[in-house]
Image 1: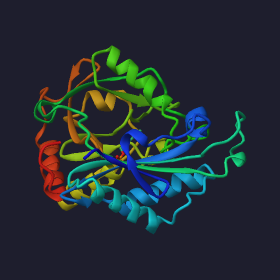
Image 2: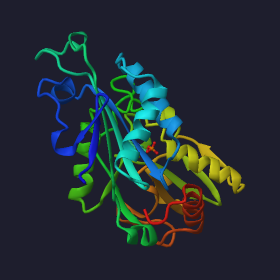
Image 3: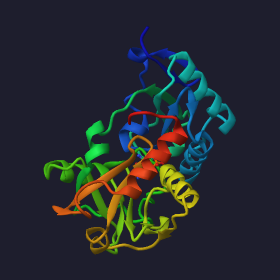
Length: 288
Ligand code: PMP
């Protein structure tokens, strides 16, 4: 049986899950999305993801034609229809079909898409040995231009930085904000560990308020580890004892080299590995 995709209230075969070339999601990147995980058949932090989706939609004046409760149910239904227990869930709401002009008010019918599939972002060896990353010269979107808190379909800012990373042989890239402070990676938030405390850029640095970031701060608090949310420079990254990235798909991934400088002793640190262990215990997830 092939995968079924939820499209505007119906479950259709993956091959038949199509939207119009006049959809403003395609023409202008006008829409919002979420990436969610299910572990053992249970949607992880579903309420928070659905809330963030609706916040993103409100920020771009997009009316999602379902209530948050109906959306939650649609996600569950799609997951069950595909018989998936561990899955990556992609919820997309596009502005819908309009004219060839920008005007979103000429798009009366937003499209709701739910894809449940699998995702492998980083090889398991990277969870053991750590990742090498670089800082990108592409500056993270200024919050007053396109706030990174909006998880919009317009990810070109991130794609440009990702290209820089890949060209440098790194699978993630760190983005700085317009003031030169560390913001986040192209699809992950970033943390450092120094003297047993965590530090991470504040949301006002112009980042996505990552749900995994929030979970990690909760786990750290549980373990008696404090987290400082503060402006950070590349210097702070280079002199960190440990560094790791967080994201729904990545979970917690150690970083062992930044801009060719080894972090700590150049291998994943104990605080990172303990948080990863706690995270996997919480989700019940095994391998990434
Ligand atoms: N920053 C960006 C730019 C992202 O796209 C993501 C999600 N992939 C994250 C951070 C991590 O957010 P979350 O933990 O909610 O997945």
